[in-house]
Amino acid sequence: MKDKLDDILKDFQNRVVSISSIQKLEDLKVEFLGKKGALTSVLKNLKNVAPEERGIVGKLANQIKVSINGEIVAKRAEIENNLVNEKIASEWLDVTLNSSKSQLGGIHPISKIQYEIEDIFMSLGFSVLDGPHIETDYYNFEALNIPADHPARDMQDTFYFDNGAILRTHTSAIQVRGMEKIKPPFKVIGPGRVFRVERTDASHEAAFHQLEGMVVGEGINVANLISTMKTLLREIFKKDVEVRLRPGFFPFVEPGFELDISCLICNGKGCSVCKQSGWVELMPCGMVHPNVLKHGGIDTEKYSGFAFGLGMDRLVMMRYKIEDIRHFHSGDLRFSGQFV
Ligand code: DAH
Image (cartoon, rainbow, N blue to C red):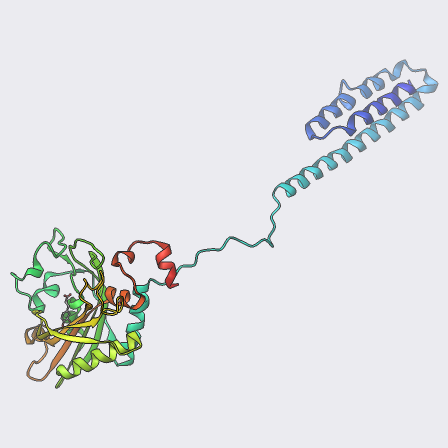
């Protein structure tokens, strides 16, 4: 009987070493210690053992039960420990490794130049105004002395909503809005996005950017207009830029001018941006028409003013030598990433 008990222990010990899963360990436990287990059947047969040996065998059987239990507990801990180690090994992360380079957002070149120009104007005493993209016919056209039959109102140029509202076609729409808020003398600019029904090409987009400027005060004249424009261009391009002034017609100014600068992409030689002319129309401008001042509630006997509209996209193209306006809205990170 004693030998049999020893064999049970040895058998258990031989088998337990190769076990590597909790389930198999449980099965082994049942096999040895369960109701029908090897050790249990020995204990059940204890009554057949001679009375003088019964105590010794019973004691030994209990000792073996205790050792088997102990070994099972130890084995379970070992298996669980291994599982944890395996998990750690498989999920191991080297936090000292270089991470892949993250893409940093940047400021769009148009916004960048816009902020720069706002700073220049603010240093000259201008305030910055804002206006809505969705405008009324009144502010976009009528208040600006643009008669109902003017070609600018043509469906081909203007995006109309069903309710008669429009997408503003120029930042000049902020002029009368501005005059309703601020009383002269004043100097304001209004930068923003404008929209026109356009066939796109290297220099035309349906959505583009302008910066409107307006100065109203006593005795404001063309000389003030020209000197302000020159100062501005020198500040923007950080050098004296060749300019030319041509007469231009806009219903909201009288007289009106077209201010061109020599193309900085081709140095005046001719390219796709300047349409081979060597000149780029940059800033239409003029003396504010009295009808416009009247719509703004301004006394035209006392005050006069000038206004200008800066084509932001072209300016940025000149500044960074960008040959195609369509890059601006392309969303191509290879383009915008250059201005970060
Ligand atoms: N609003 C005009 C346009 O988009 C540009 C313009 C011309 C603005 C003359 C002005 C101006 O302020 O005086 O074509």
